[in-house]
View 1 (cartoon, chains in turn yellow, cyan):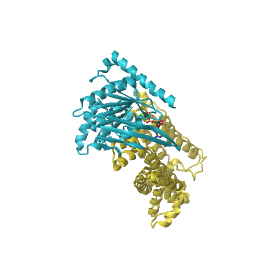
View 2 (view 1 turned 135 degrees about the horizontal axis):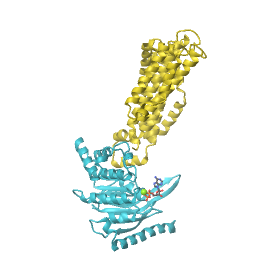
View 3 (view 1 turned 120 degrees about the vertical axis):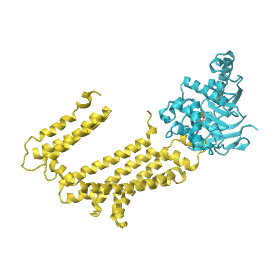
View 4 (view 1 turned 90 degrees about the horizontal axis):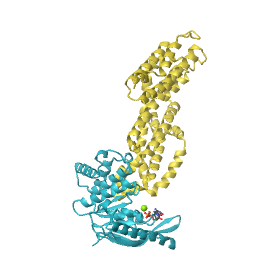
Amino acid sequence: MTWRKRFLRIPHIWFLALLLIQLLPDAKEGDYYPVYVIGSAVILELFYLLVSLFSRKKETISETGKLLSVVEILVLLWVLFGPKLDRLNAKMFPAPGIVFHQFIEDTQPLLAAVWISFRTILEGFLLALVIAVPMGLILGWFKAVRSTASYVVRFVSAIPPIVYIPYAIALFPSMNAAKVFIIFVASYWPILSGTMTGVVNIDRGILDSARALGVGHLSMLLHVILPGALPYIFNGMNQGLGISFILLTSAEMIAADPTNPGLGFYIWNYSNFANYKRVIPAIIVLGITICLISFVIKKIQDLLLRWRAPV
Amino acid sequence: MSKIEIRNISMDYVEKNTRFTALQNVSLTIEKGEFVSLLGSSGCGKSTLLSILEGLRSPVEGEVYIDGERVTGPGKNRAVVFQNYSLFPWMTAKKNVVYGIEQTARTLSRQERQARAEKFLQKVELTDYQNKFPLQLSGGQQQRVAIARALAMDTEILLMDEPFGALDPRTRVSLQKLLLSLWRSEEGEKKTVVFVTHDVDEAIYLSDRIIVMQPNPGRIYREVHVPFPRPRDHDALIGTKEYQQFRSELVELFYHSDLAEEVVG
Ligand SMILES: Nc1ncnc2c1ncn2[C@@H]1O[C@H](COP(=O)(O)OP(=O)(O)O)[C@@H](O)[C@H]1O
Ligand SMILES: [Mg+2]
């Protein structure tokens, strides 16, 4: 790649704009912590420069650039309509510098909240995975139970899982167990139904080929049906995960549990005190966490399903 | 005792409450080490007959005996190559072969199975592709893997259902040559092969005997011995007068087998 292709790119303009906009006078007097905006911009710019310098693929540079552009333009607008023009409700949307400052102040409790939420999701989700996949394989495989099971699955999946929240809270001794259970139920049905669909959709020809080889029952399940159903299992997992995020956040809000404050509680709690400079970082962290988890799952999926892509 | 004995089998398919006779009173014996082709246009029950030999379906009437024993399901004495779908897409070429070997040769150690798989992939000239997944291989390469697996399983019988049906003519001929040379060069006793095709040249070049089938209901029309001695040189053989003569007679039969359908149907 030429020097121009690496470094002559649009996101650098947004960076400069972020620095220059600080030169405008503020609409109202006050400390808006502009240093934090400049600092964040510099960090992003340094990151982008490193990517531009070391990346081997043009796409990586341009993709990173697009992502950073979005962030920088948002912050730019935020600064402009916030402190500079005073067009935003300062209580609901505190200046970005104030929020970034608060972000750094609150890093510890935020990370603690992320960890609590993450652990809850992980426990409920893994539990669902470990139980739903083998059950789905068996229910999908044996014709005798398949149709009955699929009626049950269709009925239960139609129930919005949010109704389980009050039940779970009433049923379980600890709030934490209730939340794990809610995640479990929410992911269990999509994974089960995905697995069953996957089994049913395996090509007859491939099953015949396995039968003709004289494959035994266990090997049939492990080496033929499981990998054959895997694309659909991942569909179910992604669905389950999506619902889990929504439900956990709701559950943490509905079943406020200060002893085990996850991100949902964190957001709920500070919203009640109208402390939006602490709410906004939490929302951002929630978004980033979900993106990261989805990204990791996507990578695992690409790895395990790499046989599907003709090279 | 014949290697394979098909005794008067009939086969029905029931679909939407209508019964369809796919095979009617088919009887056939195949000797050990024989290469037999089932030739016929599509729909005359070739695949159905082969799936009964595989043990994947049971006939509504009649039975099949292999070495005098009645066939009731798939068995370790038979290996199968289909037109498509023989390979598991989630296993690499080598893993596919190893997996096949595991099914028949459970006493081999892990290393022995690996070595055997590599040996057979080398025979079909795919050593460089052994770590590719089927979808990353061409159709011809996929069928070579399937053949490698079937041979590596070291069964006495090889059942092939239009294995080269989806390939372009050049690849097709080169795989026919490969199959014949591998079949002939095997150590020990030669495998008994039942090979389904609707390609007249393919049937002649490969077979000792050709069973011409006819549709509606599927049954055997004629049976022809291929007079050309082995080893056969493909390119030289198809140039000879005798070949052309034999071929036109067979085409005639093939044509009549289909014509008979129109009279009946
Ligand atoms: N699973 C099935 N259900 C219903 N009919 C079938 C089935 N398989 C094959 N047939 C019918 O049986 C006849 C013979 O099919 P097949 O054995 O595949 O013939 P061939 O392999 O010679 O083309 C065809 O008319 C086909 O439509
Ligand atoms: Mg067929």
